[in-house]
Length: 200
Image (cartoon, rainbow, N blue to C red; front, side, top):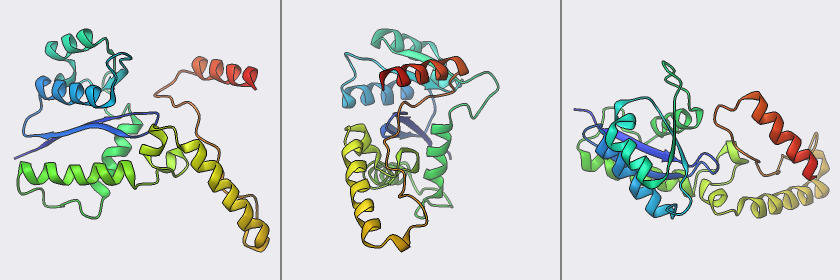
């Protein structure tokens, strides 16, 4: 017996915005998770870009019609590349590495769903994510990361001034993470760098 975990993660904030465990993998389940996430996040007026793997559960006609109805731009993994989305791969890795992840499997679908709810709470609201300067995904999603990191920098600078011998160099980098890319091409990165330097 297998259970299928569907995740939708906001690449910018790393927040899990949609998740569900089912006993089958299909287009209808993909559609359910997607529609719930869009409603919960209030994305009906500004539909997102959704990047998914090339599996039939994400590329079937029912889901394609849902993308069109909701105005979602869909992108997919490159052919024969199973790990095209480092953000998703990392999230699934973190899921399986939790100390309370049952190595022998879940007793039931209900047990799997309950465990995933607990994991999502921990990941979104307690976990300090290294990819976003050790703030929580919820903090970055809400736009609070700039203030948190500024306060952190002030505290670290004050601690360094009180006891400079504890630091061999500068304090930890507390600059907010800028734009986030999923498999960018070199030209796009250079364009963003040029725009950023022109703005400063």
